[in-house]
Length: 221
Image 1 (cartoon, rainbow, N blue to C red):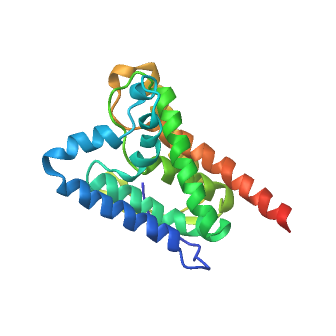
Image 2: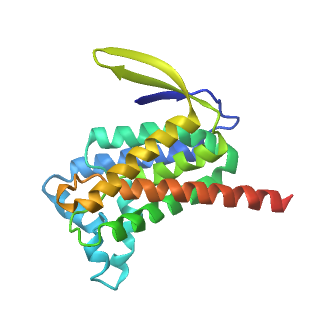
Image 3: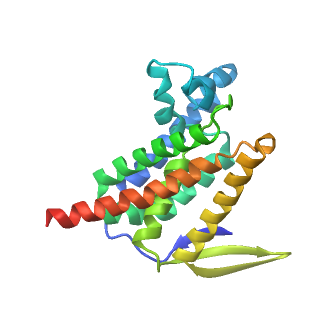
């Protein structure tokens, strides 16, 4: 299933969502231009679970932030940015611009920690905004469960475009991540390189943080 758009228009201009997309695209262009230094860049700023348990200086924590702005290719980048664009504007609209930036970063870092503890022996650098974007999707799940997601659904040789309630679309997406993540732990030798547990951790923390922001907003009134 490929989401095309949602049915809820933003009331405010999604400046942080657009800012994050621009930053991710610019950094990807820098990656592409780095040539033979690309591998060193990814191993320096990507999140390597085993390294987290072996070092004690700043490099232990820095990749939790830097890794979420790196991508492994155009498909990886465009997929993450597309989901961020669809779901980010409404979450930003609901919790406020500054809160959304903080929310996004915390979700990305929390997703990184989830991945590190799920695959503590991995020496592969994990990169991508998907953990943070998963947090945005978790926030959307709480805030707009009855919104409709216009979705492209391929069925054999046919393609259908249907509207799916967000609560079902996001729950189905989460269960895919959960089953694949569980399988990646049970059968670690079949690890595909997809950070399933980063997606799971980001989504769950997105739910928790949105509930926190909602309670904080109510308490201020």
